[in-house]
Image 1 (cartoon, rainbow, N blue to C red):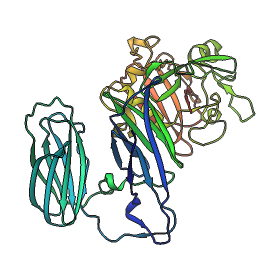
Image 2 (image 1 turned 90 degrees about the horizontal axis):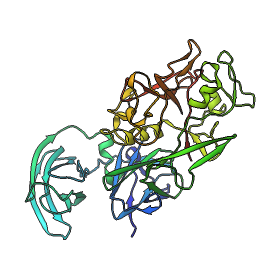
Image 3 (image 1 turned 60 degrees about the vertical axis):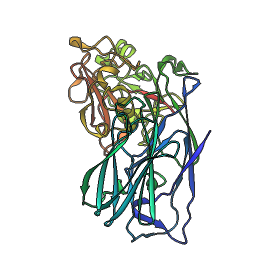
Image 4 (image 1 turned 45 degrees about the horizontal axis):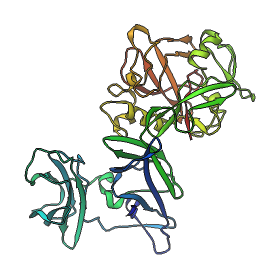
Length: 442
């Protein structure tokens, strides 16, 4: 069964004028494990461009976004009651709910169970600002928290794990904050901000697992989350490209080449790669055997085939593309035991995460006992790097992967795994260095 959630989009506090239009995008979600249907528990949608997020709960599997075209005008009327989604959700023992009032007034709070029975009904006189409440759900699986202020009301759905220690429901007032809401807070579930061209991240949850898909939607799209992992990509166990066979690895909703790309004609490290219609590669110490083991090394422009379009095919096989910075963040979130997909830590630079690096590294080949668990089959090898200053270095110690995402015109984002580090490094580097390349299926 599919139901639809309609979100009226107010981008940065603007409303459509009488001369504007409000077209819509319809985004539909489903999930599989290999080829078997999986019922989603919830879907989190994050706007990676503007900030803000919203959540759909089963049976809601269709998100309809209104967006703006035409001439906008500023809405000078302050937003009314804002009720934010509780955290954590689902909840075991207790959860926090925050609401915002633009001015002082009486707020009636009603909590009902899935059968519509009132669990809590209370009224408080609240000042302007944010107000937090702690809710212990007691027995039951689903609750509805509704706040009424003046002539308006707002509701959220609260899910429980069903195995909490509380026997009865309770609601505790935690205090208030008089500050004005930030932009992200203002765009609660009812006013999720979206403009065409925004990059969204969808995170599907099912049976305690998560699966993520990044996209920039411009038309109606059906998305399928994949929950299979550490198996050959369904329907594409191998890829033959330029005379070489590559294995594939499915890691939730991402299908990767399991080996570093090794395509092109070897040239010495002292020679500059050129836009000459021939794919050129470096092999560590100018030895072709190292390319067979670790893959080739490529300058960024050569890898991209002299374009700057994020997610371009570049030197990857047809229907595959150079990994993006966002795709690598998702992979890191899958691989880490503490920080999940969409966690702000992955937006940071330098070394991040608890054990994502260990779980992505191969189980052999790393110096000084720095091997990994290869938990998801990514099998990263320490192929080293080619530096235009120092030549070939770090074989056995480190692996470097380009992304197709530029930080500045001179420096794109890349990732490093290291023999004595358990996290993953996100940093930028000059394009004329030679790094390894991984490809992701379109």
